[in-house]
Image (cartoon, rainbow over all chains, first blue to last red; front, side, top):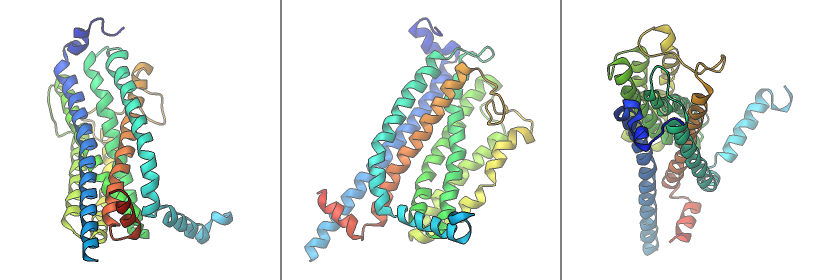
Length: 59
Length: 258
């Protein structure tokens, strides 16, 4: 196997900072791209419901 | 030629686009597809990360630092692919007035910008231990940075115009003109022999990396590609609701989900 212990895996052959920063940054960008559209979608639905309520009050 | 040739073929194609490009129809289709795409994306990420970070052997020259490749290269590929997709949708929307194409182009921009930023940052984190520098004004790095600015410019232009039709038209021109940057990025490593290495993987020749490194690279690339498709569908659904809010079908939908 490539790494015999877990601490060896974390150490990444001495490149821990660079490897984990790169994967960490990529993960952060992925996470933001998941959360932001979901929050936006909720906001859209809130606005649509409110507008519909107002339109029905006027009728 | 046959029935799909010539002018009749073009008009059939346009009819096809108008039928399946109807936002209402696409909203439902995308809603059904999202869970499946999200599931495939998650699975690909789990397998790809395991293979890339653990299963693949270290590189004989770069040690474990080369593992950055498994996030760097997929993001760099997707940054270019997303741009071509964005420009194609923008052109389709511009030429044939397909509203859905405008929406697809707009929804692609933030995802493309994210891939570009990730490619730049992970590249920098790879460059420091291997080249001894975070950044050089190498042709590949510079043209990729220009790609990031093209995405940002496109989004800024979209945001600055309230009317969606006019916003789509103006930004489509920017997107289409910016396509010239894509072959420049691709060929930069051959035209200018500076710091960035040429491609290890091309469609026309034998891969220059081991199969044990190739497999994780392909799986991680598919993971980011499916991630793009998933989030594109999610974003497009929101945008359709906003643009179609005055239509009967959206009103009915909102009424049914109160």
